[in-house]
Each structure stands twice: as structure tokens, then as C-alpha cells.
Length: 86
Image (cartoon, one colour):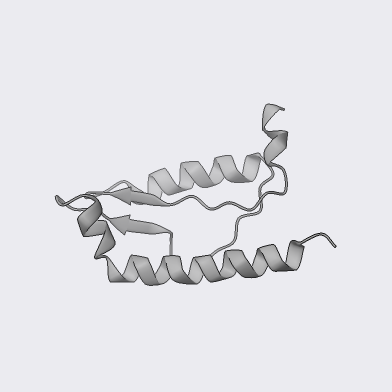
């Protein structure tokens, strides 16, 4: 019950990998977010990026991932606004 401090907090897992494993990593993280009673918004695709051999440089050039994360950020901001306590 130590994770109750995360209850009703907004959070989203993001996975970055070189070749494969994104979906398995994302699913495991998502299970943890949900089981700790967090609110997890979605986007237009999974929150994953390809890192390739260039690591963070390649991930920063993954245009599809960046567009997905931009939309995700908009959804997070919207959700936080809607759930803000008066």
C-alpha cells in the first residue's frame, strides 16, 4: 500500500529502445501505473520512440514519436485542467 501516494496522480509511461521491446516495456510500466491507482491519459499511438545506434539523438529525430508525445502532452494538460481542485 506504499504506492497510495500516487493515487489519482496523472502519469504516462514512455519507452525508448534501440530495436525492439518497446511494447513489452511500455505494457509493464502501464500495469504499474494502473495498479498504483494513477490516471493514465492516452494519445494517438503508443508513447514509444526509436533510439537506434545514435541513442538520444535518434530519438529526438523520431518525428512520429515526437508528434505522438506532443499530442500526449496536450492531453495531459487538458486532463490536469479538468481535474484541478477549486
